[in-house]
Length: 109
Image (cartoon, rainbow, N blue to C red):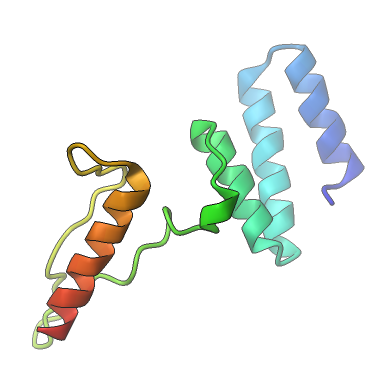
């Protein structure tokens, strides 16, 4: 659970409609939860803060794709995935699955 001071600040900044203060207090709560090894909660809170979308059921799958395969000789990445990249006509979740499958296929090749 976040400390009382951080929660008080969060509510205080919210009531004043101070977006910068609110964001700072919210980020402090996220960091506090990370320090307590509450990674899933911290990831979910961070996602909510970033885009207002909680995907608790996804448990961080949208923010953590499989490691990008690299060239064995030089160590250069074999592909680049941009944050927010969505395949045309699909949901972000299905885009992630498609991109992960591509990474696995390229890693196996």
